[in-house]
Image 1 (cartoon, rainbow, N blue to C red):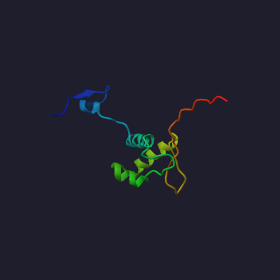
Image 2 (cartoon, helix red, strand yellow; image 1 turned 45 degrees about the vertical axis):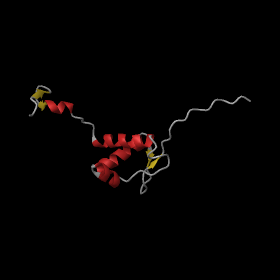
Image 3 (cartoon, one colour; image 1 turned 90 degrees about the horizontal axis):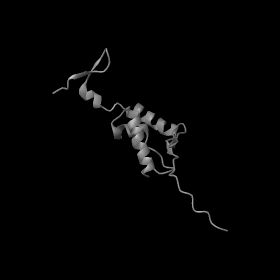
Amino acid sequence: MTAAPVRADSHTLVPADELDADYTPGYIKLARVLRARIEDGTYPFGSLLPSSRQLAAEHGVSTSTAGHALQVLVRHGYARHIESKPHQVIWRPRTHPTEPQEG
C-alpha cells in the first residue's frame, strides 16, 4: 500500500514514505565507508586505496561516484593523489603525547 501524499510546499506533493528516505549522495556515503576503514586500520597509513573501478564494482556505484568519494577523502586530509598513481592513505590516528620525562 502506498502512503498518502504529504504536501511539501504550496506546489508539490511527496509520498509520505519518501520523507523517511536518505537523500545523502552516494559519493558521501562511500566516502564515509572509506573513512571508517581508514580510521579502523583496514587501510593503514601509507596503504593504497582501491581504484575507482574497484570501488564501483565492490559498492555497486558508478566509477564517477567512486571517484568523487576519493576526492572527498583528499579534501579532508585522509588521502593524497598524484596523477596516474593510486590514492594513498595519509591519515594517521592521533597519538597521545607521552608524559614528559623528568631530567
